[in-house]
Length: 77
Picture 1 (cartoon, rainbow, N blue to C red):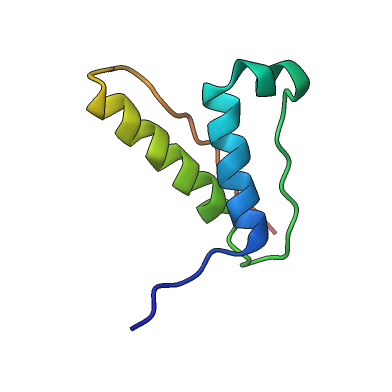
Picture 2 (cartoon, rainbow, N blue to C red; picture 1 turned 120 degrees about the vertical axis):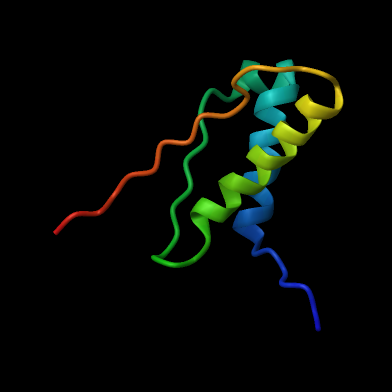
């Protein structure tokens, strides 16, 4: 079957996450990333893709230690 496609906001999120991690010029201009989208749209997945790429990069380059911290808000009613 066809692989699921990322939405435009997910692609932008991955790019922003990786630029924030690896580009000093990007960090000089931007100091945060905010994603807004509907419930169930894939916001968490968008972050996790960039985080997994970063973790893989660290593993492949022999770096150890904490590479990503994910705080996930829980909606309580």
